[in-house]
Image: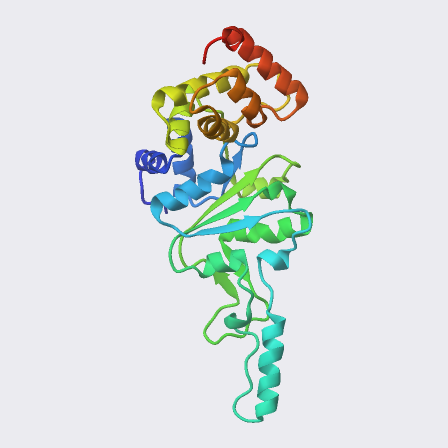
Length: 296
């Protein structure tokens, strides 16, 4: 199904600034080759949502996006009729009093929901389903058939020459993200394969920062070193990739690329999300850099 090699996949993602290690790239490649929906797990800020975006950009595929929450209903993402358009067209026919009555149950009267948009797409499409673990039970059950067969059923569809089962017209690459808000049931897990995203090595993090922020390699390396060191400490919320990128951008704005007591004081909110973590970060940096008597 997926026409590229694992090495080509890894390189294409790197070209978009998304760095997967070789093992993770091979896992992702094997999942895509089998046409399986790919679940992505990992700490917040690790890059789960960004992987689908980078993949779509890398291969020039359109991206269909779906944000999940506990009140999201199946009709909002799958099959629902545009009742307003049906009423308007029915009334227009009644007023005209001539011609054939409109068929109000054809494809044109379906709301263009994310899942319908994906199955009707004429070329390969990436579908990103963010925080799938927040779906309620009813919507999750509806979602299973789509994950399993990449199709939707429209029971009262009356479109000439069109089956009531709408199968995907082109390959779909489905990415699901989870923060493990709740445990997904076995029926859902059977239809998906999962990739656990790990925090990158210091060298890889430096490459990510350099590419994302557009800074010199030595500055990116300094930021990466500090972030990796901070992650070894007993922080309640350890800085992830997103925080590392944001902190680097802030340092460029505030400290002209220098890590000093002043620049840390102003930008510490990007690294530490709780007062206790802020104290840990400040103390660690004092010890590592001689009380900030010199720049890091």
